[in-house]
Image 1 (spheres, rainbow, N blue to C red):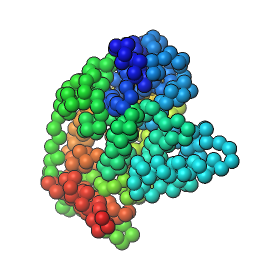
Image 2 (image 1 turned 135 degrees about the horizontal axis):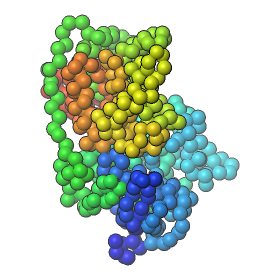
Image 3 (image 1 turned 60 degrees about the vertical axis):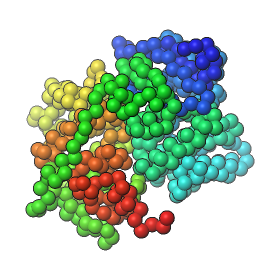
Image 4 (image 1 turned 180 degrees about the horizontal axis):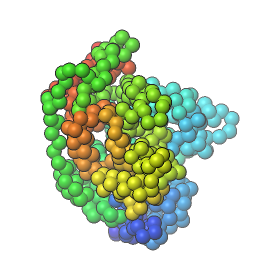
Length: 486
């Protein structure tokens, strides 16, 4: 890193090392971000991305190396980073669910104070939501806990970009579109380009590689706590980017028409409230739920789960398992170990005479650690010691470790790296071939295309059913907007 580049940089990390016991989270990382630059940061789960973000935003002090803001040694800490214009949207959303959108804006911008602060905060957050996400329909006086996860993500992004006194100089976006559908993701990326063109800086962390390639000026690749590549985005394509990350993307065949859909379905539901199409699921199918976010897909999953697991009697009602999309809210048990978070769904197979057998539980954990490559030296570590993507792997393993004939998945690949996604897709296909049924809501079109059949939702009802070669982005979008005014 040259002295001139370091002086120009909004933030510059030099020779940063961080270790947690014997684990080297960062091993001599150099990363500088200049004004008017959008830098993409990619790497597999556990590569060190979240750790370097925590160093840059002041949440973590490096054991070796230095972090400078605008070329100055200003000290360390979150307040120092914020005073230098650093803002962060975390992968695990940090809004207070019991407070309104306006009150959360005040929490993030404490300079909003004095008489009439609520009115000023309401004006600011409404304007920023309207600027980034046109037509969002979010009630800014509502409690955040009453919003969908996509709406919460939109609110946190808008609060972070909002200006009260000083405009943000660097905004760190950690998986910012993980809960957004394609339309909302496009709106955000358009705004990021606009923000960068005006002189702002963005550090974009995303496992959606097409998003990174189309939005950033430069891409930094991390692996095992080190920067292994850094060059202009134009110097990468998806294969070369994945190769730099240390894995190879395998083409996924959809296997259209491979599932028998005659005979008696496992699930046969009438049209929702008498509108749209009925819903059916057959043994061994992978069924996708598509459409714009918030149009009833998650409600359908929850309704199915309640219907199929309503038997309260212990040992009964095991026909269905659920993989939550919001792991921090309703997925993980944050005070428990990785092993306990995984094994809670399979206590029957880990028990003898009504008591959990430690050896059986350990074998179960190690088996799934190997199968799904959970990156941890010890399964007895706390679940929060894992990266977000590795936490999601634990939730997926928890569902597959059961004997459930049907697995419901609410956008389960949020924050999971591309290599792991391929492994999970293959495992899902293998389980489906053995007769297990998957009902899968996803905001990513590449995942929807892997399904045997797809139900497209609009306004809380099923607007279309697609199968085989008809499962295309154009047809999903057409069904999502059909009949609406242009």
